[in-house]
Length: 91
Image (cartoon, rainbow, N blue to C red; front, side, top):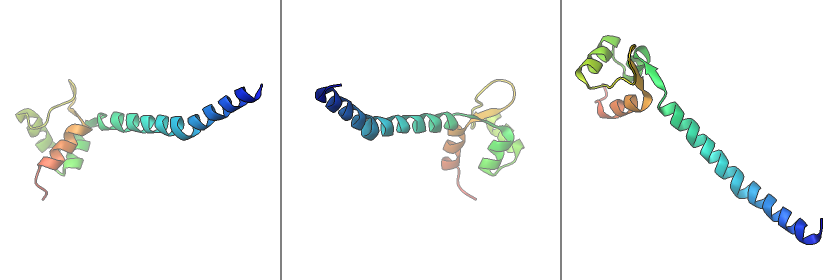
């Protein structure tokens, strides 16, 4: 490898270490946080997070205050739970 090619390789290595690696790491962190935020939450876990009974969760789902994330068993997205946590007055 001649001197010019060595300089180019050295420059590419610096770009990869100082710009590309942190950028890719931030993308992975963001993707993991995003997938965790939309992960389904069970009725029991939703009740625990909102500090209410499971019957209250069922009533909230029936009344449309809490939207279920899927058919069948009541499951909710973490984003929906967090939205409710912010909107409900704390006891």
